[in-house]
Image (tube, rainbow, N blue to C red; front, top):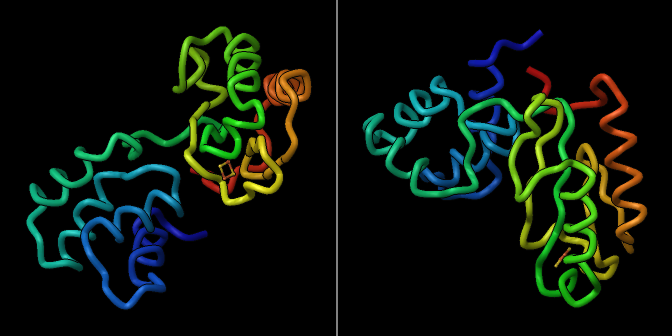
Length: 163
Ligand code: FES
């Protein structure tokens, strides 16, 4: 099994774009692991010839980076323009109600992370929600509530960001 450092190295050394920057490297780690561990900051600094402080400055500037591993279940609700027009606000309200939360974040029991997204890349299927990284389109508030309750009833499902 790959170590955390190996997974970070894999993410930052195999970026598809020709220009590798501190930000592109942090995004690659966030995409691969679901968060930015301390080890990643050190590796990104070494790769980009920046200081650890510089990398932290970039990482902490962007509110979408998280520095703790995500919960076992993850729900991402798109509220971009297409999804907004097709009723994303109703989906958000239903999911927040099902979770007993007021906004995005982790549930108090650490079982589920809720995030908002500005485009999940499937606008034609709006409104779109991702449940444990599986996209579901033409989502209704009722369906979203049921899917979240289903996830909450599971001890921990498929998770590409396994710790
Ligand atoms: S705006 Fe929601 S998937 Fe693009």
